Amino acid sequence: MPPSVSQLGAAVCQVHCILLLCHGRMQPYEILIEDAYNSNFDIDIRGIPDIGHLAHKNCAAVLDFLRARYMEDLIYTTADPLLIATNPFRDLQNTGPQWIQKYHASTSPEPPKEPHVFQIARTALERLHSFDSSQTIIVSGESGAGKTEATKQLMAFLAYVKNERKGNIRIQEAVMAANPILEAFGNAKTTRNNNSSRFGRFMQLQVGPEGGILYGFIRNFLLEKVRVTQLGVDERSYHVFYQLLSGASTSLKTTLHLLRPDEYVYLKGSGCYLCPNTDDAADFRVVGQTFEKMNFRPDEVNSIWSILSGILLLGNVEFQKKETEGVPDAADLTPEKKALLSQCCELLFIDSKIVEKEFLFNMRVIGNQEIQSPVSVSKAQVNRDSLAKALYEKLFDWIVLRLNQRIQPPRWFQIVIGLLDIFGFEVFQHNSLEQLLINITNEKLQKAFIQIVFSRVSA
Image (cartoon, rainbow, N blue to C red; front, side, top):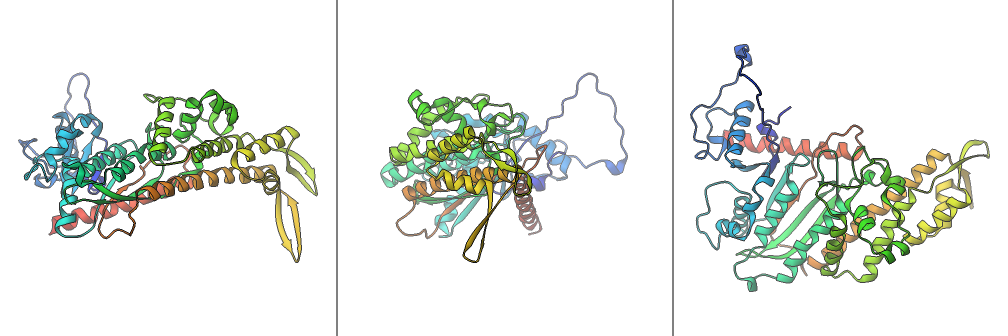
């Protein structure tokens, strides 16, 4: 079902434009008058950049208007105060420094009238300093609509400063450099998007009067942890796993006991190991360089790679059934799997004996005595997968914490530009609880957007 105008987001919204192509001869098509929509005739596509100026604003009329502008390479349209971007990837050449200058307050008193992501950023920047009030930009839309790219464009605009000496270049470079790390650990290939953000992030940026990022802070939330252990067909887990397996040196592969992707239980279920137009080895080098820019110590980086290897290996720790203490399918480990678990725990820097005990037994304390009872194979698998997901989440949180230590202000912000990059709406063949929460969050946002639009129209 095509999206309605009420589903087109707030501040910056990405949507897919549905193009209907007719093949062969055109045939008359009759419908009942009550099923017809009013249409807009003889309108100037280039002269009307805002949906609010249309005579008719029903779903069909709005989508046709967006289609017509898209065909004229006008991918940005406003529905004040919203900006709709239809296939923003088509216009990436219009995002360089020369385009930033056209929309930047310090270089152009009157920005171009044609809508653009940079226009939203300029408006937020002007209101921030004119009213001494914090501003927030929300980037919302379906998965694969271009939210990550739009966020990068917004950050590039906010980071621009005509006189570099007026900005804190060290902090600014660190804020901008964090993107490859966040994408590596928080993005993955899904059936709808090769670089889908599987987490949400809210960035608080302190920006100078003429641009330039002075300080920043990143809040991450609702990481899709289930992706670490369960994958759908033709999907991948988080990019960083494949980057490590593809880009690690021979010595690092030996040290971390790295295997091929198809040898990991957690990865081979989907049957997908490569991502189109993606060079995992090159991206691994970029992430490593970014860690250096963010002042991560070599031992910290090595620990990160070690933990990732340990998480992957956990999936290969499989249990066998053993009848004991009245439990017919009690979980047990063969000597080979015990050795593998020990190897995993060494990579994870945790005690293998404690982990084995937690996997195989339920522990209860009665009085001063600890009682243990064996668990089933399925329960042991849940325990194993829960540990893998928790470790990845805590690792992600720790990395974000370290990033913030580099870019946050010495004292807390007074006024900021908030940049919310929300995860994309998706519907899979098998939807996890986390995906349900992601979709509910997007539905709540759409409801808020409807209220914003109608409050402006009624005013």
